[in-house]
Length: 140
Image (cartoon, rainbow, N blue to C red; front, top):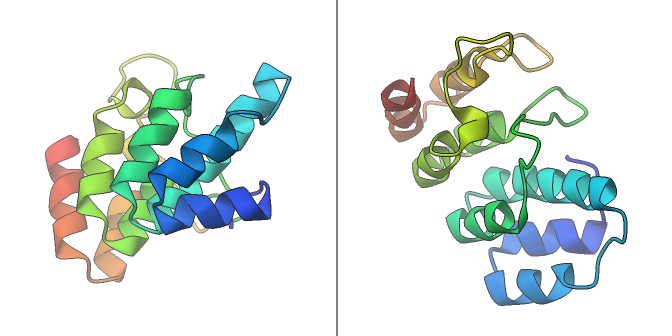
């Protein structure tokens, strides 16, 4: 799982946008800590397939550094959504500039491997998630 506050992680997985929004209001005083928390929660919401929670977290500043963060197993939010077969979440994430293909020094987000070297597309294919595979192929 992604590291963060357990109660916030549960809210992110639940998809209850109103409760998640209220819980995020008073959170962290340090912006860098808050950004890391949002990125972590984005992974949880992506793993649960909650498009609404992911959209809320992106609006609040998840992926503000325009870089996908990884959980303890090396997975990004793209990997988490792919494993869940959450095509709508993948489409949302792929529309964010942090997931845009790049010609610069940063690795293309669709080419990022998890801790086992698997891309999000490989994760979706191994899990038999055809809709997620199609969303990833359209995205890159």
